[in-house]
Image (cartoon, rainbow, N blue to C red):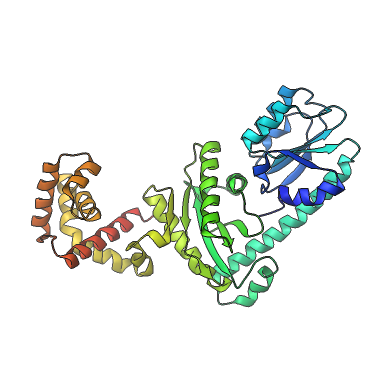
Amino acid sequence: MGFTVEDMLIISRKKYKMELIAGMSGWANSISWLLMVENTTITKSFMGKELVVTTGLGFDTTKKIIDLIDILHKHHGAGLIVNTGYYIKEIPKEVIAYADECDLPLMTVPWEISMAEMIKDLTVRIFFQSQTDEQTSQAFIKALKHPQKQEAYRKDLEAYFDVDGVFQVAAFTTKNLDSMDTVDRRRIGYRLQIYLENISHNGHFFYYNGCFLLVFNAVSNESRDEIIDGFLKRAQMRMPTEKIFVGLGSAVMDLKNLHISYKRADYAVKYAMNNKIQTVNFDELGLNRILYAVSDDLLLEEMGNEVLRPLLDYDKKHDSQLLETLKMYLKYNGSIGKVAQQMYIHKNTIVYRMAKIREILNCDLEDGEERLGFYLAVLIAQKNDAAP
């Protein structure tokens, strides 16, 4: 997850007398760069994950510091370090309260510490950690693409992860992510990574094949759900125009099986996007998991058309909603009242439609096996219609 605020504090508490005084919940924020800022001009080009250091020369009032925090918050910055003791004697309570409100880590370093030395030291550490992160991402990608070639990735990852333990992949995407240029995609990635709290050394975040992936290693279901739920809340608050979709793959034992969790997460996130559901757990998809297991898409298309073609043709000719009605009828186990409620139409209309469906399909939909066959056909049709 990169060089984080927590990593920096471990190094800097003693060496540079650094103290975290606000925004404690941002301890897992990843840092892309460290830079000295004494006015807000440069902040306009921030991409995310920047950690700002200031002596306070240009931010010598409470309002100016709050404005700087606001800018960092809106640009998805990693945090703020204030060199206290000269221009800023102490941090005002209003500033601390606002940093807490924004979940932005606010740190202080006393005036006698050399900022040049600290920035140089931490920048080198960030650089080396970014190299390690890239190597880790490439190793995980090898594990996804060529799982049988364990010699190509296992050794590179065993120093950082429990390669014999439990792994699980979550896939994140948004509209047109795979068609964005590298700069825009990196900006989105930085923002998303900032929103992932409480995970650093037991997970890894990277882009692969049209999605951002978060690999969990030895993380409990409760912690995993807290991380994803918290991420979505922060993303919705700070990126209101972007609709984020999440697909969660199955938990698997051992790194060699990571590709299984990834493929299921990929299926789940596509299902989420196609059905406009924010989060989909593959293990909760019921019969849809059967469709995932069938690699012959042509066979699925033929099966769906074979059963539902008369209904599809009727809907097309009469601009009706019989297929959608059948889908809802099967979903709610034949409850006319529930279907009418969900489709916002009168019960009598549903009764009429179901009679027409039985006539067109030449079935009574009372037999359990027959119902199951039609339900699978509806799922297949849904999958085919949603396919990109």
